[in-house]
Image (cartoon, rainbow, N blue to C red; front, top):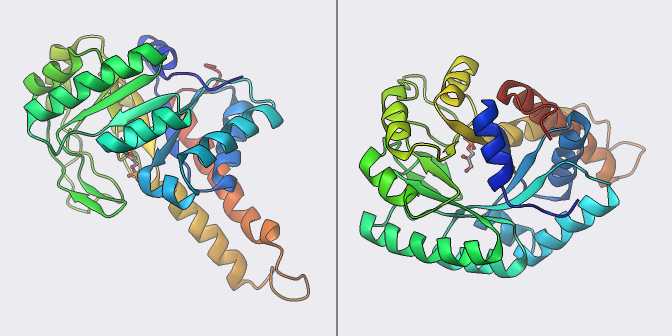
Length: 288
Ligand code: 13P
């Protein structure tokens, strides 16, 4: 199946009260693991690509070609969207050009009027090309690709302003942060989420910072309108831990040469296990 926009899968998730996972990709092994797990579980999936990861993988065109090749060669039949994560204004245009099927424009650090005008322009461009567009209000805290932001709670009126522009989905800060949550994290602000939902109606909401949010909070967020949940750090931690263990046990190095396929196999399996666990919690299994 060719890449699809995230619109239909998110509307189905919103109506069915589950969430589609966005799993960020960093290399071929991650991409293949995520696609194979989604296919095995019959789950729709969104592959997230940060601008840093796009650069690492030799550019957005390389990424789009790699993903399209895998969809064909691995016989992937579940719906897959290739999505720019936290895109800059310029990055959005590069990904549209490269063949991504979904774009996130993160204008949350701009004054609201500038966020509105840039998002409005991109709504039109994406609409013409049949791509889905995610916008953001209220910076998500933590560090991603070297960009550090505080966890904010978005202003529901500003959320409405952006939602009314016709975006496909809205990421709104509700105290969530990227990376690991600190021990004194007060949890998600469900009051903020409910107030945003009231203002934006049917708009599918996106929860960033999916790593380390307790399952009960995830489920409550889904019940309040979250239809997409982003996960990155948890896959990174699982991949690193499994690779480190393998190397420390010396399995790859002595007498067997330095076959990268063997070296990366445990980490690859760890990503599959993490993605499966998340898809089960998000309720997307069998929903393709
Ligand atoms: P985590 O790294 O906390 O899982 O967040 C991922 C994310 O929100 C990507 O946009």
